[in-house]
Image (cartoon, rainbow, N blue to C red; front, top):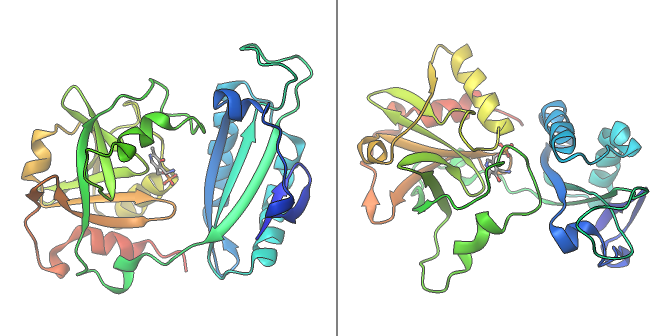
Length: 279
Ligand code: PMP
């Protein structure tokens, strides 16, 4: 396995980052995950733009290598050989000699990239495969979930609670209103209409979310970006999750509640998955 660290592509076991990197001590960094199919980066410009926005919102200066990111990812793709890969790209505020909340003036950002094999969405070949299992939980995260930060303990905490059952995803809600998954955006179909939480809520502006909204609109399927109450998810006909590595995947169970099944040809998510074709 090869990785990129501060200017060099090197074997993963030779990569060394100081424990005084602020991402280690403060979770002080931002990241992106970009898929690549058949050596072709998918929605690269959209991911790069969101990355730059995350940097600007956290006041982390963009390293100059970011201008060359596409080339770096292409080189890493060749090195790591898998046909389809997902790239994890992290920029931290950098390393400083002593731990202090305020970063030192001359601090230099760290840029780290690795890639892993990206499995094809199993629902593509088999839309009848049983849908995912999710759990509803209060959204305990900070108020800036629009920023893709490496500090994700609020997202992952309850997955590690041994008293809770393992599920595929956790759906986060605040004051009875659905926000997003802990690692995905959410869409719902009710009385034949497609809804997704609005970007005015405390959610990540998912690249996949945005792309799917535009694909559906292009195909004359309207998408309502608005508040979705927790109660309404028990009245929905479909619930799907979207992300750069999941594409679109359906949910079957919300805790013990099973979403009523429909014939595949009546489902909107299967249509959306057909429109969404990165291969
Ligand atoms: N929300 C959260 C909290 C996420 O972690 C992700 C995946 N990174 C998404 C939404 C989906 O975003 P994208 O489609 O850009 O992968």
